[in-house]
Image 1: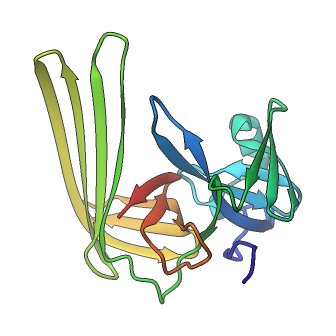
Image 2: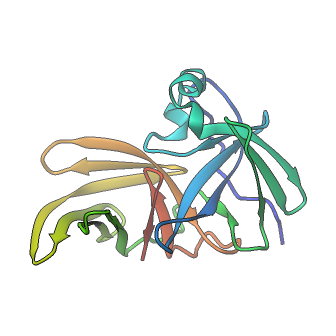
Length: 213
């Protein structure tokens, strides 16, 4: 079994070659764990993936405007050492549950089903804010999307919901969403798995955010 991540052959817009896609576990508040995708480049730099697809990324411009997302990486077998822009060092281990390979999409993979992303937090004044986003892949080309935002404080609460639908295309590490009202969006995409099976699609990353089935 290979210990390297499977990855697409895409490059950044200025030709920087990719070594592989991974995702890391991050402890959240108060006790939650979130996952964030990371791209390792062959020149020893890494980038914390955000909304924009990597093949649209102007790395020189991004290293100035998004410098906190950049750093350096080294690998020693299963150990990955990441040094961020402030010089802080963090070691991740492929076999210790905090560093995993991520995969591009291919046509043999089916994403049919619902995926959710939930975030929020409790503020010092006792206010609870909650955000839930759900995308449903109806088949290999159609989707629906719903977003719910809520705020709860003491005995009161307020909620706002938005729903939309359209068609989608996924290739390698890019997803293109074409909404019925005319808007088109290109976002980064990856499949996250605990092992090395890209057919395991219980977690996906859209625009740098983790969605779970």
